[in-house]
Every structure is written in structure tokens, then in C-alpha cells.
Image (cartoon, rainbow over all chains, first blue to last red; front, side, top):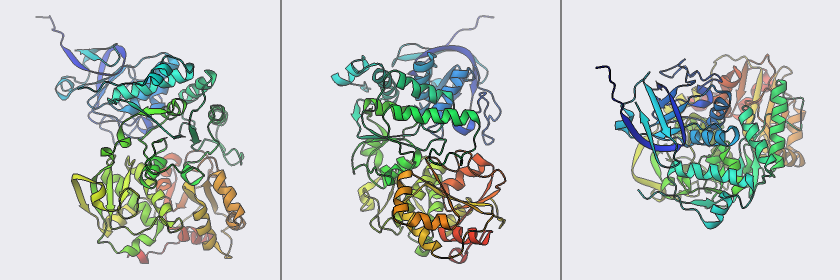
Length: 145
Length: 426
């Protein structure tokens, strides 16, 4: 009793980085352009997690959504520190990967983005504390829950 | 899975810094995206349309100015999308100081990289039309839909940062709409049972854009049963421009085929994927989509805005014909047209521009009336024939919109209130 067994989920590194924090689980994708404000809050009134704040969270969502200007919005959130600590998706969104690549180049902040298969993805739940380890570019990422 | 990315020796050298730090940085971004997408190689592109010209925040400015500081230069022809300012008519935009100064710096940084001062969301009507089958890297959703669908060139859906990275390296990952297979229609929308008179209204093509965007999302669709001919002097081209722009706003359409009209679709068989979904469309669907683009039924009118995407020379001609030597626009109505410098200057030479200006109209270049503060603050109700403008303006500007045809827009501007002819839609 009292000993919690750590479990390790494996996925694909879409962008390298490390993070440790609490999961914010979105039941549907969110568009960063028009759907998320400058403080990391979901402002899309049609979204199931409207008003949830992604700042310093491990953002978990099925995929990306919407305008290609989401790259600039994500980069801006990373720059100001109002963004998530990591993004975990079932289906990797190129637009968000570009935002992470550019932030690494111009601000030296590397936001991990990990793609998981359904069975692994389903083991993540809202509020859970996890460690994301995606240090090796184009290799296997691990998420410890 | 053997999806390992293979670079040519030249590309590897660029990544390693042989062409300087700006090329190396852009190559890291291109390669990073290629790996995330599982692309197996990069391909060379012939042109770029850069979309990062509109100021969204400091990150975009930091990126572009960093490329300039590192000595970056574009390697292929690069046109520019609209910016946040009208450089030719500086008093038209009344944004705050940050928007004005950062917006200007962002536009200047693009010029410093060697981009052309196109400042237009319709570069394809402002002097640059890529050849059928050529590979390009275009950003700005309407331009992507147009270059793929109407010209038959090949671009995936690019956006901020990747556009300039492609311009500086001359490369993109080989993926998405660059592939033959990804260009097949997985959805067929059949309009053949609708009375074709409906499609003689330009507003109907905005409605078709909403339908296409809603039904297709990001999928490739083929539309059958629509009238038109790309060699008819610009009428069909401008209709497809408006429809594609609206579909890319209502959905994420990067490529559509109109059977018998667009170049890759001489027949449905030529472009349909096996097991494509088939939907029969009705007049009620078109009417409902049209109605969704008007947010008020009031006949009060404060302004008219045309030219989203940017007005073409053919549209200026059609407008000049509608205006003719009729009365001026009502005093209290602001009538704006957004267009490129190139189209403005050609329309002036042909005499169309002065007909519009003499009737009381105003021209906005280099930017657009829904992305930057142009409209007077008291404006509440605005009429447009553009589906894209009607889609975004209520959210961006907090105003109400009425969708109408070109002739209804002119009639309304003269009357000082909304005038619509419902007979075609009955």
C-alpha cells in the first residue's frame, strides 16, 4: 500500500523537449487562432472545455484544428510563458510543430510534442501528473504516469 | 515503417551551414516538419507566397527580423500577402501605435529578405500565375485553394514561418497536396438538379463556398453540375476565387475540383477516388448557406465592402459597367474596395478605377478591410458580395453583414439602405 507503480507510455517525438506537470485533457481539438487567448485560456464558446487554462499544463487533445496562423499564436504563448508545457496528440498537427520549431530557434525554448497511439492515449486522464521525455529527435518519446 | 527522411548532399550541406546561418535555421525547420510528417524527401519549389506579413504578435516579427539579421535572402520568387497597413494610403488605417510600428517593421523585414511588394491575398491576379503541375509553397488559405484548384499548380497548406523557411531554402517536405494521390476527390457534391439561373448571381458562389467548406472540411471535393468556363473573360475565375476563399474559411479546403471547369477535372472519372462519398445538393441547401452569411435582416446600411479576396481588373470592369453614368453613392455610405497595387494601377489605366472613385468610392491597397482597422467606428451594418468577408467580419470587427450581389451592393450604396432582389431565390 502507498506504493504507486509508475507506468510508461511510448509514443513518437514530433518535437523534442522535456516537461513535467498536470494533464489538461481536451475532449475535442482547439484552434489556437481564435480559440485561445493571449493568457492561454480557451475562449472558443463552442468548445467543451471553454474557459479552461492551458498555461503550464500538459495539453492533451486528439488533434489540431483551424487556421495556419495558429503557429504564430503558439509561438507567442511560448514566448510569454502563457503556453502549455507539452502537447500530446493522437494525430500530430504540423501547424503546431512549426510553432514549436520556431520557438526553439528564436527563444531557445523547446516545447515537446508527442504523438500517441489510441491505447496509450486512452490511459491519460484530466488532472493526472505526468513526465514527458522526448529528448531524442525523431525517436521514441515516453510519458510516465 | 521505412519513413526515414533522406536529404540530398546539397540539402545536408545547407543544414550544416554551407549557405550561412539563415539557410541552416530555415532548413532545420523544414527538416523538423518533414520528420514530424514522415516525409521521405524534400522537393524544390518554384515560388512562395508569404503570409507572415500581417502582424499577429512579436513572435512573427522576431522570426522575420532574425532571418534578416542572419543575412537571409529568398531563393525563389516570393510574393507577399496583405500587411497590417496601407502603405499607399497611410491615413486609411487607424490602428494603435504598436500595430502601426510593428506592422510596418514586419513589412520592411520581408522586403529586406528579397520578397516582392505584392501585398495582396490574390497574387495570382497581380502578376504571378504558377504553371499547371509546378510545385510551389503558398500560404494564405484562399491563395492555396486558388493555385491548386484553378491553376492546377501544387501547394500543400502552408502558413506563417514555413512559408519564409521554404523561400530561403527553396525546399518543402514532399507531402500532402504535392502528391498525386492526395489530389483525388474523396467527396462528390452534385448540384445538377438545381436550376442553373441561381448560379448567375455572384452571391450564390459565396453560398457554394460555405457548402463546400462545411461538407468537405479539409477533404478534397469534386463539384458537378455547376456552369462556367475559365476562358470567359474572368467571370468564372472570379466566382471560383470567391467560392474557394469562402470554403477555406468555413472549412479547411486546400483543393477542390469543378468538373468540366477546373484543369485537373475534365471528367469526374479523372479525379474521383475509389469509394468517394456522394452528396446530392438542393436549392434549399444553397439558400440556407447564403442566409448564413447575413447576420441581420435590417435594411439599415452604413458601408459596403468589396474585394475579399482582392478585387481583380475584371471585377473592376464589371463594377464600372454596373455604375455606368448612374447616380453617385449616398453621402452617408462608405464604399470600400480592397485590392492590390498592381490591379489598382491597371484598372486606372483602363479607366475603370475613376468611374468608381467619381461615384464616391474609396480604394484600400496592401491590406484588407476585415484584418485591420479601416472602417469608421460608427459603422454597424455592412453589405458585401464576398463570402469570406461576411464569414470573418462579424467576429473580427463586431459588425453585422448583409450578403448581396455586385449590382445589389451598388443599388444599396445609392439608395443608402439595403436593396435586394429576391426574385431569383424564390
